Length: 341
Image (cartoon, rainbow, N blue to C red; front, side, top):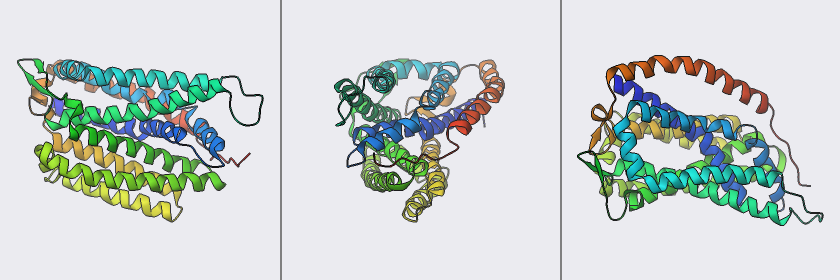
């Protein structure tokens, strides 16, 4: 594999890590927005307890991917910054607003009545939930724009399209699928980290979100065949088909394990499902970084830069991975047991 291929593979691993960790954080905000029933307050407390220690650390993978693209594939970085200017800035705004709302809600004055939180906390909770819903959907729409062929580049300039590349039917469908996957991951994780009645609540939500993932996958497939035939053929081709097949089996296993109440194994299967989906997408997209005008070899920086990236990454990972492992080891060792107040 050429140097740019190795760097791109590391970037895909970064996307997988962000989807499995940051995506679950977004999903926690989705379930926070739709919390209901007699244990609504306990559900939100469980989500805050699960997210609180790690939600900022999970965004390190997004920064990793951005820096990698900026350094190793500068023409692609420039094209994406121009062609997806609006959704990328909305994503950035959503991440900032979501984090601020999460903190402000936690430190808002509590209501003196027993009926619930104070109005300020409710408002910040609504902002947190709305940002958690919109942001992953926009990220999925951007992914759809990169793969659908709607984002065109000529002579180094991004061509304006109507509708914009991120608002095509294919991109919108992929955005909805990304939203459902984030909700599914979060519910599976929370079912593993809670106990008692709360565990049953999150188990039901995981099964519901998994049903939406299956339904939206069925919707996306014909859209890919008509709107992104190269991606459709790539997913069914020799490189990607085995990985996608493993992802389908992992999805079925995750649902079956939830039904059997094997929550830890269901979490592993859910992560495998998402990882195989993204790796399969990357293999189907290869060798293009932005289809059809920017293949990897044209987007890549010079060989010395790529070598420096490959030599520097192990050093950085030697610091990052143990730090993240310790963080999760400290705060995720025991499951959370919360009962209805």
